[in-house]
Image (cartoon, rainbow, N blue to C red; front, side, top):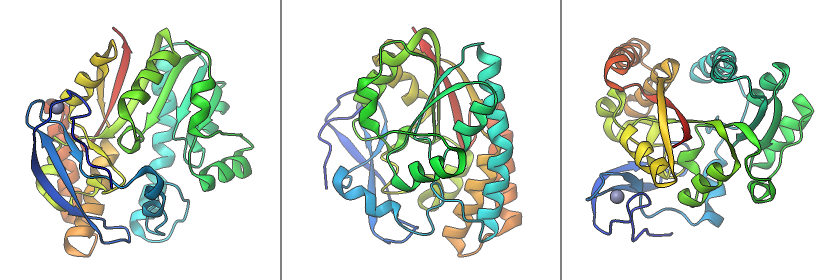
Length: 293
Ligand SMILES: [Zn+2]
């Protein structure tokens, strides 16, 4: 295990315990999240060594990298993902006419493929072998390991997307500095992460599925994202809600809490997240549009 001695955002050295949660996808190990006393950033601490984390992604219940359609939650996840893929591509098209797209953490390649169909020039980065293989097999797109980022030329991309990826990344500041280096002057970085200040996080507490320990290393609030990118001379220009995530995460949280996917209760929780989300940035997950400052 690796223990942080400094806050990844403000370098503060005093932390308080925030919450302890179980890994719900197989290992049943318990992990700790602490909060920086200075900037209030919440991060998993200690974390598994980078060389040990792979085993926590191997559970057959962990669906982000697979395409199995078993079970109601997975079934809904797949259907919603299909719809949101189109919404994601439409978001890019609305932001600018740029076509050079880097998707970091491209998973099994659905977003890369959908973007390519919409005439984007796509580059994918994905650490998992299963993800890489499926992207090649299903869509004929080659993707590379993370270390290829270092070989890419400065200011190459109009868009860099990280859909539910930043919360998994070791060496957070190095990665954000890399994004800054790779984005064009007027380019857009699009980061989607779970929202610690969401209604469903407050409702489900340690059962909130988006803690997803130990795979999620950071548990961002909107303020944390702003502070992080401002450190690297960038700024958040827009925050958008991910409405379907509220329902999905509430359903999964309900399953962790009660052992069953109580559809009515999780639907109400998702709905309340969205109602609050629109006015108070309390959606389960949010999209941050980031530009050079
Ligand atoms: Zn801090």
